[in-house]
Image (cartoon, rainbow, N blue to C red; front, side):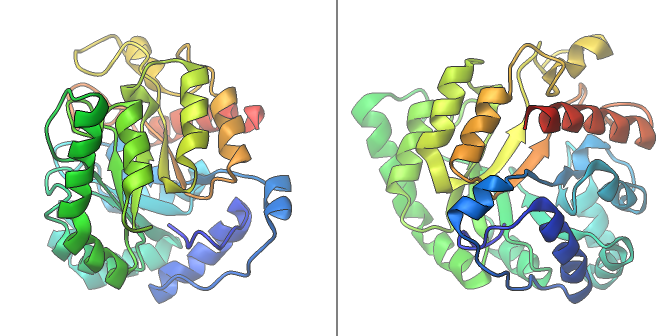
Length: 312
């Protein structure tokens, strides 16, 4: 994720990311006025490796530019196994693979490690100029009102030593509103945005896990503002917890299910959102690609991207 003071178009970022992948460092970008940025608002796409299941990184990385992205979000098991692949091939070989494809490491997703177990992963991310890490919140569940605010405040206190490392390494820890977590409701997200003690703590917003209400979601985006680090272009459709016919499973993808993304995109534009946008869904079972072949997965992501671009 880029510094919040650096606003640039997707095309400019993608061009710069090729340099980033080669140098393993993000360059400094010139600041633009808010008005200029709004006039040329574009989504900054990142490709989730788990969309391809356990396919090899050598086969996934060439797809990044094909889907209008310039960075990869690396997932570990069980959703994907690309983080394990990186560990097996070693940092140097992974660096060469990124360079070969002109792709930046934009995000590391690590739910298994949790928000209090990311220290080593943040230092790993720093080596590659990776600025974003996604995980879940930790704490009591099913709280409301003052109890919820108090629990989010306690979570913030526990995060402080980890955020010190995030600041040191230049990483933003983005908490996803995952189901059955402390941070899983609109109110919990609002409290996180309001109480966060550091700009290095952000939000990965997953509409899938929230009421499929365009007005609620678009209003939430505007309320969360610059705390947003990742936006999952992902809707509930018919869910992802039981095996369904593929055409029903794909209703999670933008442009297929009933959720109208236009109000959400309008709100992202209104706040001049400059974080990652990840077109996303979960297959059943986890660990398989969303479709059988690399080409089919890429085509489906592009189908959703064309829907989003048309709305913009």
